[in-house]
Image (tube, rainbow, N blue to C red; front, side):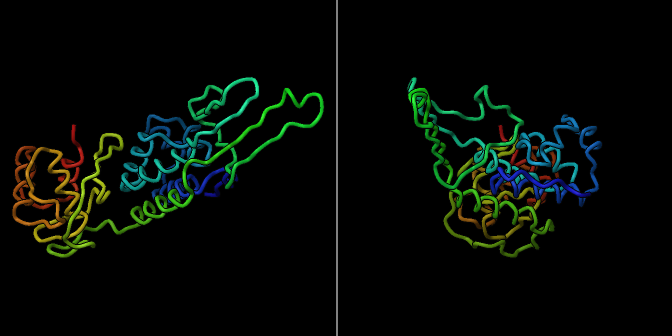
Length: 269
């Protein structure tokens, strides 16, 4: 379908999010009517989300990914980057009182309205000279989120969205190799991520090395299981703890982390 031009006020992360949502919609054949009928969100809401009028909520992104058959995690990461960009605080200096900060929760700003134009530097408006100058005010708009960080987050998220969905063959490295990894937990909706990989489908089996293996180890720790050191090596000890998790949740105990086991690992209270 022919899409509308995006508002010039959209930041790079928001543009990339909308582009990916549009691409997935076109590939899946979903219509606005079907999105409105099969999700808790109206057709008009989806029109805003797909045309840059509003950042979709987390639940809308998860529902969209499910219907489009896509991995929700990278879309959520891109959505969070867009939300951070949109939620950039703005400081207003008024000669009638102290400075105050405006954000997306300010009553003067509607949630679904397009974000104001972003400038690369502070935008200062000076009052016109004359008798009325004393009643004017200076408005300073500052960006608190580095553009480079937003672009990096967007690029990583897009790479993850377009990465092949097929599993990694048994015993092969998944990139990065074994070594020292850390666990940095975050939550997107009801999914937990440990900061090493956002996959929910990639196959991890005995002797696999890399960030996906480290992610499994971190999530096992979150389940109060003991995979040993978080070293990015999927050895016997880690596999044994995966088997224990599988048995406790009545799924095939094959010691292989596939889509079903990833779902168990990422759903942590």
